[in-house]
Image (cartoon, rainbow, N blue to C red):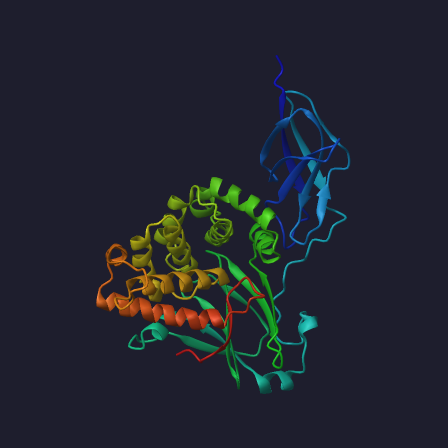
Amino acid sequence: MADPKASLTVKLDVPAEHRWSGTFPVEVRNSDNLILTATGVSDGRLEVPAGRYFVTASLPNGQQATVDDIVDLQPGDDKQVRLSVSDLDFPATLENTTTLRGSFKEFVRPITRYFTAQNVAILRGNWLAAVIDPKTVASVSRQPTTRSSIEIGFSDVNAWIEIAASDGCSYLAVPVDENRSTTMQWHLDPKTSALELKFDFNDGELNSFFDFVHNGQSFEARSISRSIIVQSEQYMVDKRRSPLTAILGAYVLLRANELDGMDVWTDNLVNWFTWLPDALAIRVEYLARVGAHSAALRQLLDVPKWGTPWIRSGIAYLENRAKLYVNVADPDRTDGVTDASRTVLGLGPDDLKKIRRIADVFSELASALDMTQTVTALHGLWRVS
């Protein structure tokens, strides 16, 4: 007897040498009533009842690629269909310009006007450690630059863009995936502090996933994130591993509070990628969500060693958890906090002092966050040592 089910694999003819590639969210709808029958990702096998379907795939800019004809699936079929994107807008890769008069034309400003208001430098090193503990010897270097774009290669010494002005400093994280490079272009309006950022991670799959996240396409981002957790070894172990893709996927699922399968995943992140500050932020938040507060607190105390998260959500998670643990552990509080709760955390006086300092620093960072950006961008800060 024929199987009443059928399977479908959707392929996208993505143009070569463009900014996007890799996995895209797919929807399969019944052609009679347009009811959503299945969701998944391109190149993944979808099982659906036999029938006739409209098939679409979503792009990070909201456009949709569609199959020209209705897909007719008979019982037992295992069909592959291709979606053309030739009539859709695929962005070109981002070019690294060397001056304000380069190809990033929409950000062009007269050079003299720009540099009288702002001084730009590439900052390398963990500046957070010295902020939390002033006794720490800072290991931060500055390289002045006249650029409004730059390509940063992978290193275990994280890079930030520092833009110093008369009213304070802005710090822009430069996320770089393992053994890859990131091209970044920026413009910070000296009058309004409006920030424009563009990133190219020099990997089409990571670029498209990042754009889904940044553009607020949460349903589509969750579809990709679920496929990432299923293939977590690929993103952490094999030759094309992408810790930054795994990090973004974890943030998306945490935001949706979808925690299944994340214990081993987040534990591997902190064990394998000690150069990636967001790995710690994600592990702390996961442990706290599942009630392992003592373990979360122990990880949180290591924040100064890891540095400032590259992704804005990491700042918020660490601030909230540090504040919570300070409030619970404070021996002077009497408003419902029990000794049993304090015992669970097991904070001694020195650790309490340290976690209080972490809470204070991250409160300052959170208040300086640019909420229009996915990547961490901080405005109006002191000049870091």
